[in-house]
Image 1: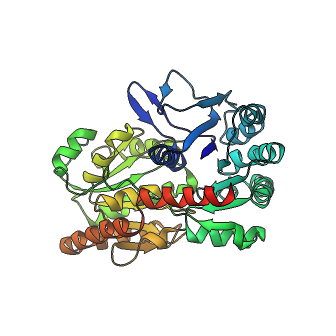
Image 2: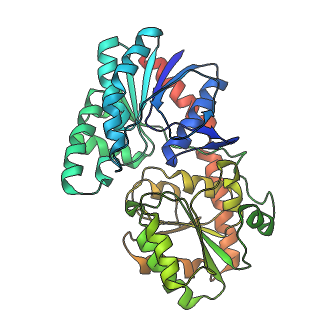
Amino acid sequence: MKVLLVATDFPVKRGGSSVTYGGAGACMAQLVSGLVEKGVEVTVVTRKEKGSYTELFDIPVFRTAAVDLGIRQAKIAHSLTVLPKLLSVCKSGEFDVIHSHNPAAGFPSVFASKKSGIPHVTTMHGPWADVRIGRASRSLLSLMEGWTLREADTVTCDSKQLTEFVVGKYNLDPRKVEAIENAVEIERFKPKTCSKKTARERIGVKTGDKLVLYTGRFLVEKGIDYLVDAVGEVLDNLDDVSFLFLGGGFDEHVVSDWILKEKLSKKVFNIPYIPYELMPYAYLASDVLVQPSLAEGLSRSILEAMACGLPIIATDVGGNPELVSSENGLLVQPRSSKAISDAIVEVFSSPSKLDLMGGKSREKVEASFTVEKRIQSFIDLYERVA
């Protein structure tokens, strides 16, 4: 089996550490590693990254010139420049399947599939057009997204909810759309592999408080501003709680400016980036994960936190209810800082319940969200469409 993967984000090595860009980039690394281990031949077409780096995998990786428009929509422009390289690569190898990731990569893959006759599978890693800023941008990108999904031979989504959403929104044939749910490396992300003190030392966080973690891109659609507002409300009620914001992104200033303005540096730790190899320590250093997104597929950060035995507080959107229930956390109303702060206060009110929730989190990922299951689902799909 020979598979051509197409994506706008694909991880690289910088200074010996792997670097991923958001959940989709981490999923790509997971997918490639799993496919190669199963004997699948993988080639990647993606965009160049800035600065010096080496490839993370010993497979053919073709990188096209990145388009830097200084705005988040640069990935969409890149989808137009990748097509010549994609067509060239399709000619150079006898691929069984083109597998694109998100509409920015799926759009040129449709043309490549039609030109080459290679079946095209496209994967949605979460809501795409609907989370763009501005009505005009959402409308235009919805047209692009809808056309890409209709023209692909098969569509997969990272959650059951997202599958239902795209089928309904774009009137897709439900027989060509299926959920292949996100997964987590349960051997990398494990509970209690070191003490909280050791984990905090590894990531440079010095506090004896209970620690609330947010990890992800600092973007308004991730609900970061609602979590910021919730911090003050929590600190008004609990004096032994601190917060760790781990991520960075286009709206990073929302967090950094607020910390300076409110003089919260002793209670709020802001780490824009740590190497992916250290991510398990971020979860092990923490007591609860808060994910305040306004839209979501099947959150990788939630899965990783669950695998590390953390209770979860998440907004009741997208695929979050597929991961979080009263057994392992709390679902809260989106766009509400009070709902977030009330939930944080509630989970810390009972240490025994906190431990029980964390145990249920680990049980759930072990039962349903393993990498082995996800990789085999994709291989079975490739064999059906090839």
